[in-house]
Image 1 (cartoon, rainbow, N blue to C red):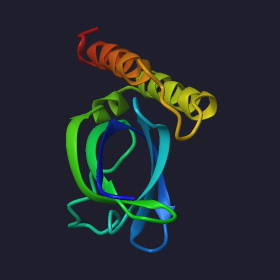
Image 2 (image 1 turned 180 degrees about the vertical axis):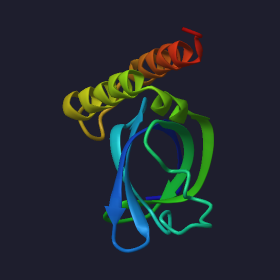
Image 3 (image 1 turned 45 degrees about the vertical axis):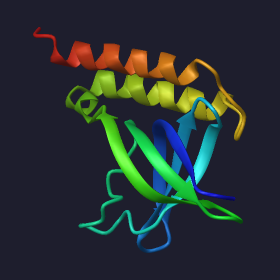
Image 4 (image 1 turned 135 degrees about the vertical axis):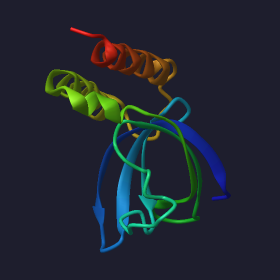
Length: 130
C-alpha cells in the first residue's frame, strides 16, 4: 500500500518490541486502525508524541502486515485531563467505548468530531476555577 495521510485521535498505546509502540487510532475515514510507531519509546524520537488522548496527523506506509508511521504531527494534546482524576477517568471511558464499539478499518463518520468535542468540554472543566 502506498503512503497515506491519516488524522485521528490516539486511543491507546502499548509496547511493541523493545523500541516501538502499537498505536490504536480513531479516524473518520478508517475507524479504528492499529499502527506500528517505530522507535517511539526512545527518549529522543521524533515519534515519541504518539501517546493516548493526542489528536494526530500521521503519514503511514507499508505494503503488508502492520502499517508503520513515517511522520507524526500533534494537532492537540489532551494531556491536561490528567490533572484531575475524575476528568481523566471520563476521557478514558470515552476512549474505551470507542475501542469496544467502533469496527476496525470501517469508516466512522462524525464520531471523531464528537469525541474531540467531548474531550474539549472535559478539558474546559479542568481549566475552570473551583
